[in-house]
Length: 266
Image (cartoon, rainbow, N blue to C red; front, side):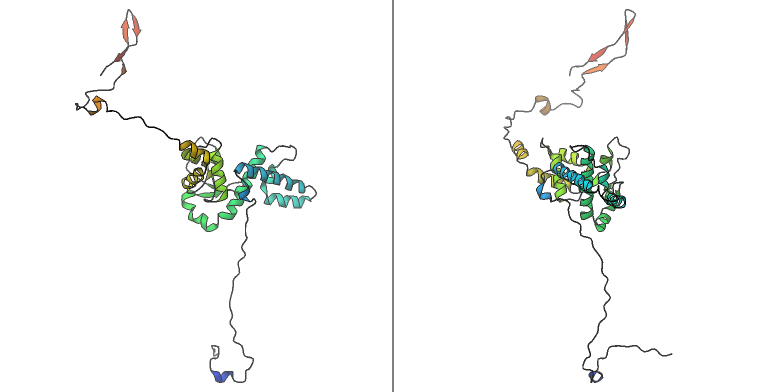
């Protein structure tokens, strides 16, 4: 059986009489569907992470009230996608700490879905050891599993650097007392792990007017004097020893044991 290899005709004589001839090219295209994730809130409207959590908690309450006339199957499907609705209460007028925590987890999960891509997770897999917890939050597993710390401090949630959410978390850690750089970093890392944190903390704190005003106060240093004589005079090794009080063995005096201490003056 003979096989023929068909190739497109390039000879002009072969195309004579074919007025409607049009060259055809077959292209195999693979289309991929990408999901565009947007922020739940407009971060520019909020000056603190606490106010953003409060607004989100009120939205969750409103959504749960809208679920009342729905069927059980529809409600269960919504609760499967929005886990935080299980912690929302409709009985109290004021927001509870549980609702505020649920709102914070929802904002963090939305933030991670938008910024934490698969390629980005792979690049930090060895250094941060990211994993998903029961609330579908990506956390960094450190080496403090045996420490007497809170679970959030042992495995802080991951926050992408140089994002509006990271800035609000840093400002909340800076607080009303306008903490310094080291104190702010320590407060942030009790709950979140933000790469390049020191650089972002320094940038956020430098924009704080109260902190800059307090640290820019003029301070007059005292006039310097001569060093003490024993610091500049030549002496033999161990010529002066800073021994103050030392313990002595128990002694007996008038048939009773007494405790003695000795002193040495340089």
